[in-house]
Image (cartoon, rainbow, N blue to C red):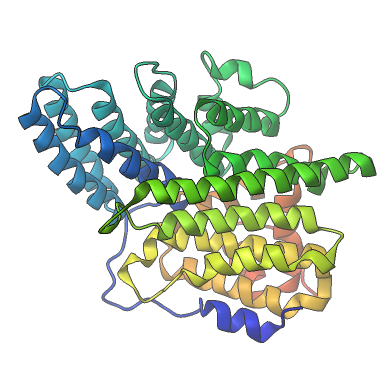
Length: 402
């Protein structure tokens, strides 16, 4: 069993950033998977010498490198402007559909980061158009479907859900509860082209059932746990394939740190749900969460690329420790929550469309629409006075701590 000091030494997340570190525009680390996938699926196409109009394609290729640099540098405004410039060039050159789709994908990701309701809706519509465009590769379309999943999971906002699940074929996925529609969207992505990203989001449905559905029989609970473990096994195989496809003699075609941070975070989330009620099996989910946390280097410029994932990792790691161990691991829970607060307060703008929006959505949910997330916010506020104060600053009305 891990003690408080192991958590402290593993993360060191309370450190502040250097004063000289550049600030970022509104960001959502959860949806960078779209940029990562676009990077390694897109280069193969953009560098294809057999395409017509080679001079323009070559120029667009160079511009695409600049576009990805803007995006990875968290300059959402710069990325959107560069994407608009490249789209005009691609259209004038009558470039193949995949070229335009790659550029539009990165534009949508960055537009979502920097925007509020209307801009985020536009980003959703773009991803939907790409996901159903049969001229494109199935991998490209699956990447767009994954972007839709990320847009939703950024805060689980109802207006994003409504924008996703309108029009064919998406409206047909929306029967039943919200969580069922999101699962079907992940399965839609897997049917197009299997990815580790989508596999772990299918697993989230089973995790939610284990956490929230008290009417499950023991046989069904066992079946759902096995489904989670099978999906995680599939995701492990897929992430290895995805990384191998991105590897060259000179290294990776992109920095895999962000992708791997998110992978370990979501893997930890699902493993933990399968572990609730079986504390002796907690090592696997803790190892996954710790893998994610270990990738965060707060004094490095590149840390913004994963900081938005790290705050969710801290929250859910603390939540599952609370769910499984209660007061026995309260010290670890306090450390993780303190790290979460420190990261967000050091740069609130970075987390505005991510965890801060997530907090607001959960705060305003009615009892009939609430699940484990809102319950964990309230219960963890009782564990950590600092987290309690943090939530009240963002408008939560909580019972007085004793």
